[in-house]
Image 1: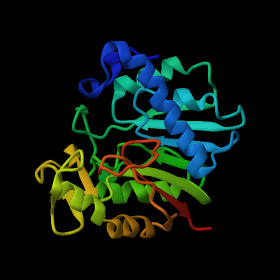
Image 2: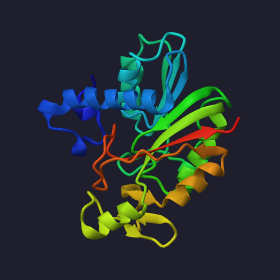
Image 3: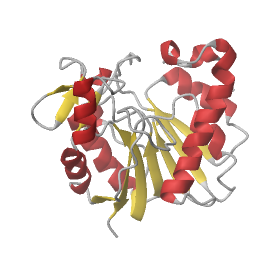
Image 4: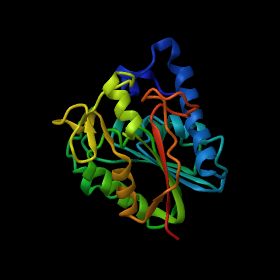
Length: 249
């Protein structure tokens, strides 16, 4: 259990009294989501894009067997260092630092997100996932990350990523003030809370999300699993919308 202060998003963390409980519960929910939406199996190889301080890694120690493998990377060197130390007993768990500048993490010598190469060989991952990553990256970076995801996935492998999907329901909810946030339409299928700083929050029309995936041989597996942010009354593992896609065989 990492100290609350290790979290670079401490401003969005629960209060101290609720931190440990929510850390465990949220990680468990995401692990359950991967089992439910992607049929995650104990011997599979998993890639956690934006592993943070290990909330999902902690849960996956109870899901993956010794034959499975977990790989996680993150832009925050302090979070990665903590995970590398904490998970030393788990020989099939590995963490890497991605030296990419980000809205709440300042890299000393950052590279552009569009240039970051995932540090894993081709076709070695069964399941890649991200939570609250593609809701904070510009479209060119997401395009590159999906290209890298496709590269490391085995044929038939799955990716599970959260987005803010701005369909008609969500757009109407934002206009009416029923959604938890309001993003401005940029006129090209993208929506931003601040056009000058896409990292603060970004959403996409469904056709843009589909196109971003299909460009890299990733076919979206319908339906989108909508979250609750747009005012929908749904049973959801997470607050954001979940898009599942399969790499071509």
